[in-house]
Length: 192
Ligand SMILES: [Zn+2]
Image (cartoon, rainbow, N blue to C red; front, side, top):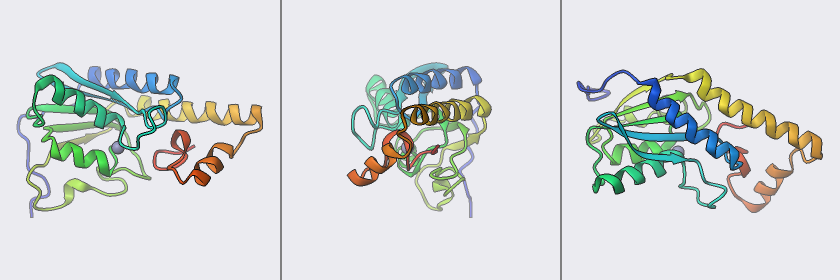
């Protein structure tokens, strides 16, 4: 049973593009969002960018990858992103892995693993499901240290702020009460 269709024309990760994804993550952090960023690249050019905007736009689907894929589709005028590669700072979740498969992306390069929700090998692996009509190549670990640090720094700062304000646990309790996935990654994303 072939686990993955080999993609002969996919190249090793180019850290320059992961830095562009990291810039998107930094922007998300400044907005108070769990810092995850992504870019879609075609022929060495960034054709779509995205950052996590779940809280600011109150939309569970606005993960960095989804926005980057939508932007690339708009720019290229096609839902099919043949020959396009996605760089994302955190391992894609099941929703984003599904979108990656649907958009026919050629390759996925991610930085940090997400043991709680990663769907490219950590929690589950969508691309190990046999019989799909498309399989991207997947490479983990591009600028992994930087990609993980942007998350740990963000949550460390959040905890420090909670200690200062005496609001530890308040965000999470509020999120639970509202029945949402939680503010700034209290659940569903790499958590503090
Ligand atoms: Zn996602």
